[in-house]
Length: 156
Length: 276
Image (cartoon, rainbow over all chains, first blue to last red; front, side, top):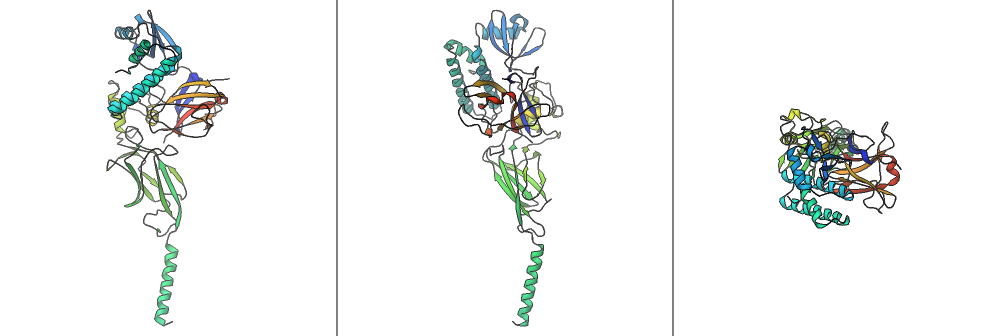
């Protein structure tokens, strides 16, 4: 069986806007932009901090590792403070990524006054509830769940 | 019959004959439908009316109440006339100039594009997608949308002329225009139309999920290859056991999960949303 999941692409045709499942590589993707000490941006999401090693995940699911010390001082501190001893379990990474994306969308819609305070609160609450269920099914303990909610921005 | 009565009878018959010769007759109407969005790319869901006008005469009017089949939110009819004197004031003939108006909040809105069309032919169906707002630089993106991108650009963009439809400001693989049509934010690299998850599940099916935009209509299409692609509809279900159907689904701003036959995994699949 042949899968094309690692190369999803969105392209425009004459009448459709599309997401393509392709075998292409080098897809530009980003999440939280982090900056290394040389000033280069790294666009990915943190999924764990173990000792001095930060694991990042790109939106396509691929991962890479950087030393904490290679990041700019501000980012280094942000990651150290939020992620020390914390890891998104592998089975939860897709849910976590989707959860963060949804929160970002909701926050943006709210800032554009497309969502009222009440609508934002209700939708955020629904998203948190769904994510907590995912955490529960992954047997994540309460403290780790709470920390993931914190780093996701759900509690802001 | 008296001579005078004969005269009137003949005159009336002649008038009827002349009238019949020059009067138009009803023909199958032309259907005009599409999606009307506001200046930020959000489809209108309510409190908006779209009307077709022939000169000063209003031909038809539709009040938006939500998304309809085909990813549209309005549907209008042009009553077509065969020619000669129109059989009704609102009837139009092939080639007549028709103007389109969109009224929101009691005010007629400027349109980025699609403000006029040529009537006919009878029986035809015309897709007409509309965007309200101004477009001073004429690039198909409303000024309001471009100004929003400028405001979020951190100083990298300063004028609407610098916001290009084919550019990809946030480097997420979607052009600015594609993001506009997908209802995603062109300044957020994580916000794009993208399959986030593709996994095999029970029942010989593949599960795919993606973040939808509210009021945007989606469908799946597939092709055997990308060298000479021939995209055709792909059946999907909304749960693991439901029937696979050729259908559309309307986004509500949340993640949606669709299921396709696992045999489709050897083909290229797109999530498609209608766009002009």
